[in-house]
View 1 (tube, rainbow, N blue to C red):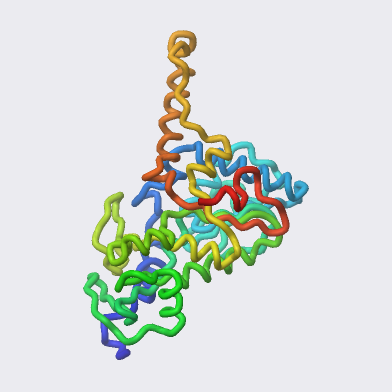
View 2: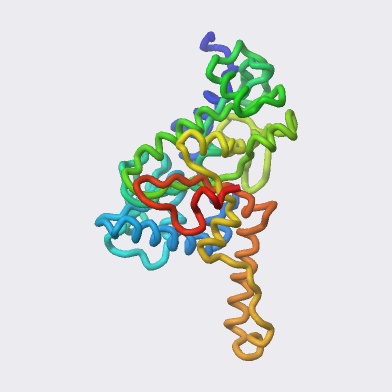
Length: 321
């Protein structure tokens, strides 16, 4: 392709727009542009803390016990974990600058670890190719697209296996490989990726209406343009990622329920006996309801893969949907 040609495959354009020296994620904090489970409620960090405790116990309390957050943003999740033992080693993996959080290790890639690996809304930002009728879709900085040449044999093979319906396909190979590489760094412990996405039944049912590539800026959905001005994201083919590591899928509403997050309103009598406690519990119930909402955050997928240990109660393969 001539250097002067402004059109590039979506995977290349996304990579430059998000992760180059002037890319979106090196200039912006994700929390400034979109809401995640981490920023929605401290209940999520509490659930992750309980999960880490279960993994720690199953491994026999190693020293150090690693908690690694991939796509850590500004370290919001790691900083919010309550009651962290001194032997726990908290590591954020992010290309952006080190936020300087006390007690946090900051790296640019996933290190070998023994403990809990968590990737919350990371895979949806891994660049991917887009095909139309088995040809590569190219894009220029303003978002204008055109058709390029034939897709690679492996991209076509992935499409036929995981996205057999629809002419336009977002190829999940890069996400499969990224997740497999991250899981391979877990020597013993549990790997968890939390993200929005779809499975084969969704893609078969909706066909060409299933593509999800879009942009976000300042909390609003915008036209995807790989010019560095917005986040670029596409839903994750959750079933494909699970298969890539021999793992399984559990919906967030079920995973968080297994970790003690429930949207139970306090009894009305508490409003008289202890108004402050009543208001606190009402707020917690409201936050839990948002995290568990079937059509919202509760519908997110948790991709789980245990390495050298058992799955925590309620999070094993039979709990998957």
